[in-house]
Image (cartoon, rainbow, N blue to C red; front, side, top):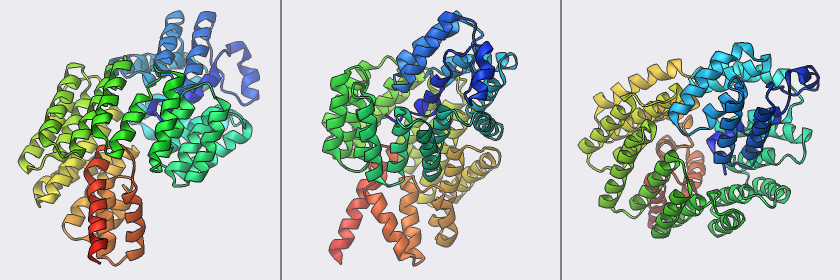
Length: 487
């Protein structure tokens, strides 16, 4: 299970149980020390970190909250809650408290706060500097290396992630969490054989845990091995029915075209989760099944309900996501622009939200505006959105913001038949099916036949259960088949 929070946080259980008195010894050994004078806080923190390693978010959060109650000045617990919690207000309050307390913490803890808080607040330059300082200060800390590798996977820098994670595994050959991330790095980088091998080792190391099967199922699905993926997900469910692998089953059914079965599984996943954020996210995934079936009326109804639920729960980002999905799916341009405006309004409301979440979702809204405007040659609307994205990209180091800017710019240039100029921009957003399709067209128009063929092969087998996949890949496959039949 590749969860964003796990990517950012799971490594930190290495910090458990080190008092200030032992910090010199641990620093000398290349380990990051974490300080607390409270034995109960230390015990809860240790349990939380173990749950993080097993990708058990709710249990980890509960233990972290108990640790913070036992020691209200426990900086690592506070910053971890901020990153792990799905509640935007809890994220904000614990992040603020951790930053206030950081000057009184150890040097390593201060670096930790600068890194993790900086990523949330779109202060990427000082955040990454803090990450690099941590790696240099604690070079023998395998779990710190795991964090860096995991972050690189999240940023889609798979070759670099492989290097870091392999070095981590050299320090700790049987470290399950690092093997999990290495398997993802291989698979997302296109080397499924190595990805499968890493996952098999991961399963063997933790045979009684559900997440190894869940993760293995995910990369099997990514490779288009749906039946094998379902088998792994069901093994995860058999081990722990409350873990959440129903979501994996639902996503797999959706990609297989079994939309009714997918909706049933999404409903089961909703029942099992206690997180309001997860419930809204699963409802949004379920809404995509109506799109796959081409049922516009039901898709619209489902998206409206998702937006209402997100609004009532104060989840502005998810509310905006629902409107963006509607904007990209809606066939009528004027109605689509109304949904873009609704997404902007959702983000403008005073919902608790980190700066990074705000900026990244705003960038996605603007990219949607460009995609729809370019389709009907509304150059004024598209250019206005590009101008805003350009300003954001000049100040933000978020990979997501940068990709949205390049994808939108490439889309506008392609719509204006400036294919040669569009290509370098679209290549920066080449994991997005919208940009992949436009890039394929640009390659074709500029005579880059080999590149077009390679990209067509990748897009045809793109098996990630996202909105972009729903709206692009099935139609692209059909067009490729039709073109082949004509020839």
